[in-house]
Amino acid sequence: MTTGTAIHVQGLEKSYKDLHVLRGVDFDVARGSIFALLGSNGAGKTTVVRILSTLLKPDAGTAAIAGFDVSAEAQKVRETISLTGQFAAVDEVLSGRENLVLISQLRHLPDPGAIADALLARFSLTDAGSRKVSTYSGGMRRRLDIAMSLIGDPPVIFLDEPTTGLDPAARLEVWDAVRELAQGGTTVLLTTQYLEEAEQLADRIAILHKGRIIVDGTLAELKQLLPPAKVEYVEKQPSLEDVFFALTGEEDTAEPGDAADAPGRKGAASTRKEGR
Image 1 (cartoon, rainbow, N blue to C red):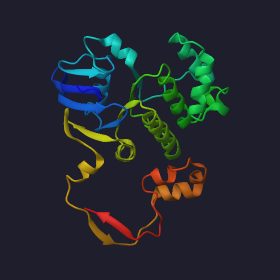
Image 2 (tube, rainbow, N blue to C red):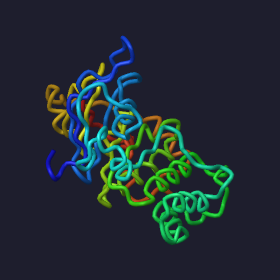
Image 3 (cartoon, rainbow, N blue to C red):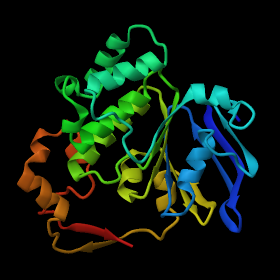
Image 4 (cartoon, rainbow, N blue to C red):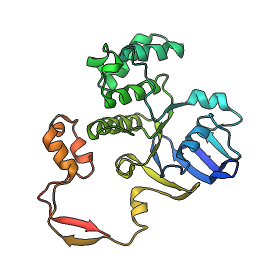
């Protein structure tokens, strides 16, 4: 494990009786980067996250977070990481600010109110901070959930399918939050089934299939595994995403850069299509 490596995984194996979930998983994640772990349902993504977050012991192999072994130094690992699961772990009875204050108090941090206010501002939730979370949209809940995960400034955060069930606009909100994490120096391990999510966010992408990493590289490196693109000239019809944002007007109120980041949002007049 090098000094620039935040997560090191080698030969990780896990089985449940005759079911071999992980069959020797290897990968490294650089500090301050976004690493996407892709795979279909049952590929073993969540199992990897549970092992790395000390919730599950591997049958074989080693894993380290910031130099701490997940099995031998579990407490040190827990002090280093934060985990955001597939469903937002927020208290709907409390307000957004109260949720953040509560977690700050549980972590015995000084001035919980100031911490809460800073995170509300960082995730554009200040105006909704006093409202009960039960009134929040899906995207707002997920942003609050990620904000709660950052209390205590963990250097490594695991996001296990963070946009599952969110609408397109809410998904873009979460993408912006994840990008901001990496820009602030946080290492992010992201598991997802959405290919466009990994394409938009990740510095490196690994594909987990039948318990093994079958490819690991940058998006450009992965694209080179296929034959060169063939250019054809066809009439480009608007995509469903184009229609959605045109009708709802969400694109007009999105943060700067969202339109360029969102997949598929190319002009209907475009006539160039790349295929394989």
